[in-house]
Length: 109
Image 1 (cartoon, rainbow, N blue to C red):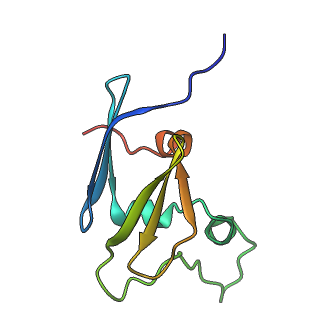
Image 2 (image 1 turned 180 degrees about the vertical axis):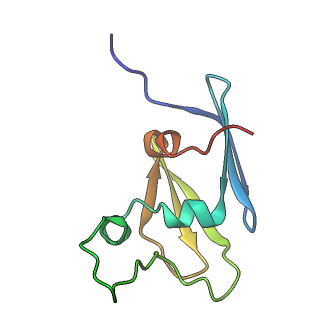
């Protein structure tokens, strides 16, 4: 049996709050912006999230500049498989596939 990729039935973006997806199978996923930004799938952010050997002076630096409120500046669909988000911290390289978004979905509330 071939796995069917997750498909959104409805996508709602609140630029200063969250991204909400109602999936075709009825599951609802709400992604707070700070969570979504910290889980950016671009190569640079993935590398930063990778566990590294820690020393007493090493710090875990999360992606993003959170000195100002985080917002979505622009978002657009990429084909029929992903959402590309431009963030207020000037990060623009994250393309969130629907499969990835479903994988990282916070538990339903």
